[in-house]
Length: 446
Image (cartoon, rainbow, N blue to C red; front, side, top):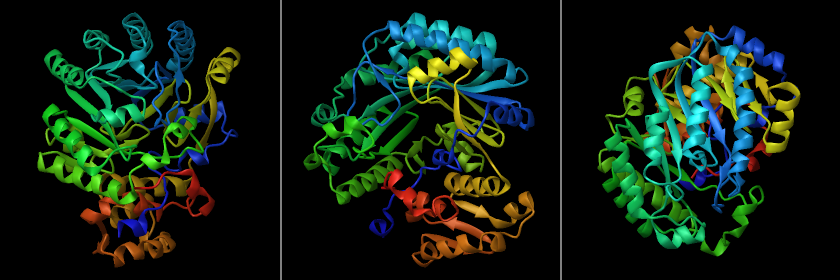
């Protein structure tokens, strides 16, 4: 059944997806969306593109360098963007901030404190909020956590990927296992309210047996959240992935076994399977909000801040403001040139039409909660669900026949197996994806 549906498709961190963004979207379109937005809460995403070493699997927007002065220049341009953008959000309160990359902890303690001070001077921060940062355990001292705490961060996400040494060598990401345990222990000691660990299954030299050992160690590590990503091997798009030997790659069946074992082991250890690639302890906010029907999804994955606009700062970052998406210049040189010329780095985006908004609401509900009440969609958008989505429901029929989806009393429910194929189910409601040429631009779902 999994093999039947294991084709390529979006991860739905947005709808429409980033493939629908275009450069006809203007600064005025963004300003109009900010003006018309119905929220006064803001989530900030800050992209730090630098990494000291190249991980062969990585498909992120990054710059490999050991020259710290490049980060000084970047912070100057980031400051200019912050100063330009912040006044547009003077009536907002920041309740969430996340730094991603690249490697945010590539920055020195002094640079981190300088940048957080600048951000807090220009935006209104809530006293209580989610302020998180991604951490590379290979390039820092334990004292970095003290700096992050001083800067106001209360959540850390640590990239582990795999504890197996052979796998680490194969992807050029060797790290010290004990230091990761020490990091998590120190974070808890300092009062960080949540720790997340990133893992990847499907990497070269991984087997179900070796990955099971990594999962066992992770359970001992006991992070509050886990992201267990499916490695997307797209060497035609990401040059570094060409360093990975095809002969070293696990088979599709091995990947499926890894996923199966991971879900069994983590749920057996008390974690809640949030969906797709996320797990959380029942005491974590992600699990609580999913249980309450209030989970949200955006470019950062599953998230807790439902009624927020998202402002992306830095090269390649994406904003979601009201009824639009807007993306900054993807490469560093055009990013600098755009800020010099315009004070901002807007590259492309899209404004949602009414159909986009309806479909976004449907896809978000299904991917976050694995169910859908058609009557609620009717009421929210003044439609008749079965009529509006007649073509989509025909596409969904194969999932109903295979008992992956059930529709009873106008309520759609995804089965336990169907949750593994949630991206495919959402694709039934994606009018853009029906242009079949799109398939090759996404990773496989398993």
